[in-house]
Length: 201
Ligand code: GAR
Image 1: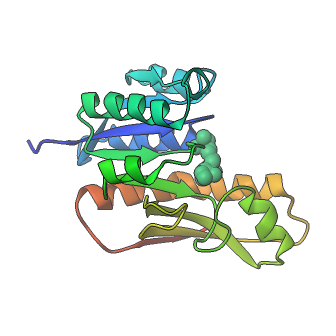
Image 2: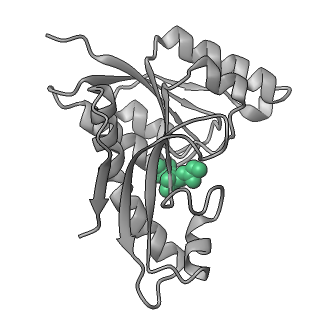
C-alpha cells in the first residue's frame, strides 16, 4: 500500500471543515491521513470533534504566549514534531507571518469564505451582501505571505437570493465548503493541478 501523506489541521472554532476533511481522509483510498489537530484556543469546539474521531489534538494557546513570535515558534515545533507534510487551515482565525509561511512553503492550504480575490479578510458574507453580488462562495488556496492571496486551488459558488441574511448566506456557503475542501485536499495530495469548481445545487 502507498504511504499516506501526513496532514495537520489548524482550527480556532467549530471545526466543521476539519470534520469534513477528517471524514474524507478516513476513506481507505485517500492519499492522506489526519495526524494532528491544533487549536489556538482551548475552548474551540472542534477539539472535541477531533477527539471523537480519535485524532490527536494539541492546544497552542495564543493568549498564553508572549506574542506572535512565541506563538508561531511553538506552533512550528508542534507541526514539525507531528511530521506533517500538509497543513490545512480550517477556520483558523490567526494571521501567519511570512516567516512562518516560508517555513512550510507550498504546504499550507486555507479555506476562505468568499470568491477570492473578492472580500479578503473578515466579514466576507456581509460585504458580499452589501455589494449587491448575485453570487458568493468559498475558495481553497495555498497560503502565501500576503493575506488570502495565494494560488487558488478550488472555488465553490452559491447564488445569493433576495432576502438572504448574513447567517443564511454563511450557512449556504459553509455547506459547499464541506464538499470543496475535501475535494481540493485529495487533488493536492495527488499532485493534480486542475482546479476544482463546485456549484451549489
Ligand atoms: C468557515 O466558513 C471558513 O471558511 C471560515 O471560518 C469558518 C469556519 O467554520 N474561515 C475564515 O474566515 C478564515 N479567514 P468551521 O470552524 O466550522 O470550519
